[in-house]
Structure formats: structure tokens, C-alpha cells
Image (spheres, rainbow, N blue to C red):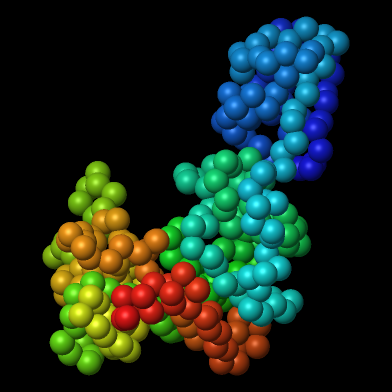
Length: 311
């Protein structure tokens, strides 16, 4: 996709505008092109038009720059790289960054991630590491995910072989992950472990502890405590979605800032975001098989918040 505005001249009578552009903006689905048109990014002979506008031969269709505004705001990937080699990219994901667009259309048209209004890692990888897509690596190299509000260490495969090896390692539970979280309430025990299935009710988005869910296990260690809460280390032994947050809520210690579970009372400290950070990951390197370990320092906003409630 070009970074600059593009213009095309219609050569067929009575062709819909969205269909015309679908044949010219390679990699973008018709649905995403309709979003661009609705957002006012497309003009016909200098005027805004609807997706069903029927073109006449000779009319000029101009598409505004497809470079997302958020790309400049985020500054690309360079500030987040913890490690990079031929097969692997290890990033320190900031809180607030989506992994990829919602839905599945981006899987068949990955460039559509660049047309999304929300910052997302898939789009940044397409721009900053185009070789990953060119190598045929599925999902732009994304082999696991962190929630949008969660910060921390993240693995990206740069080749199809690395992607296959890492996905297999996650599936076989050969990847060890360690999180840090600031939780609400006074934690009484130094260590604890939760064995409780987690899942969703049919038709519902929220994940919670339920006997009808999938088996999940998480170990917890207290690193520090104060009257308002505690800093804990969480080690998920299974890889269920939201399992750390669900298990902490089950213990009566929700992660502070968790919009699903945290309900601070009057006067209780309120953090700027979800206080959950993917601190460390250990695995076998997908190319060499040798043990690899990477850590992401706890972000400043989380360190400052913990310091403020301790004092």
C-alpha cells in the first residue's frame, strides 16, 4: 500500500465505486474500502461520494493517504525491541495497543490492518517489518496475544517455520510466562495456587470461573503488600484467555483497573489503567532449540502507582 494519495481513472461505465476500488487497492477487502469511503477518504472528481456511486468513463477517483495517523504517533517498533534475529522478534508491548483488528477479515487481507482507525500491532509489523509478510508468515508473525490494556513482553515469529515452532510450544505448554499485577485488598498468604476452569457463557463476552469452562491453573507469589493492595507475581500454568484476571477475582483480589472485576469503594486508589504486566517469558528458541528468556521492565505508570499506594 502506498503512503501517498492515489488516483485512478474509471474506464468502465456504471461500475460501483467500491467495486472499482476493490480491483485497484490490492490487499484491501471490499468491506474495508467501504469504511474508507464512509470516512471521507475517497473523492470522485474532487467530490465526496457514496460506495454505490456509479462511475462514468474518464472520472478520476482519488484515495487519500492510507498511512494511518496513529503510526506517526506511536513511532514504530524501534523503541519496543528487546531482541531480534533472523527468526524472532521480541517486543515490549505498551499498554493500550491492540494486537490486530477485530474480526477475521485481516487474516485474508493483512494490509487492512493499516486502514484501521485504532493502533494495532499487525499494522505496525506490516509497515516496520514487511519481510515477515513477504516470507508468508501467517498472522503477520503474531503467535500469541496480550490484552489491549496489558503491557509486557511479546514474541513475534519472522518466518513460517518459526511461527509453527512457537505455536507448537505454546500448545504443548512448553512456554513459561510470568506476570506482575497490582491487586486490591490485603493478601494474607505468601504463596497460593488456583485450580479453577474458566470460560464464557454462550453468547456472552465476559470470561469467568465456571465448571463448564476449560481447566486452568495459576500460581501466585506476593512480592509486596500494603493496606490498599499487593504486588503479586502470577505464573499461569495453562493458557486460557483472561485466566489470571479471573483467578485473582476468584481469590477476592481483582487486578486494580480491571473493568470487568475491579469495583473500588469510596476513597480507594484508582489506577490509570489495568495494572497487569507480562514480565517474563521463557521458551526454546524456534530455530536453535536453545533455552531463551526475555524480561520487560515494569512500566513507569505501574511503578509510580504502586509507589503511591504504598506511601
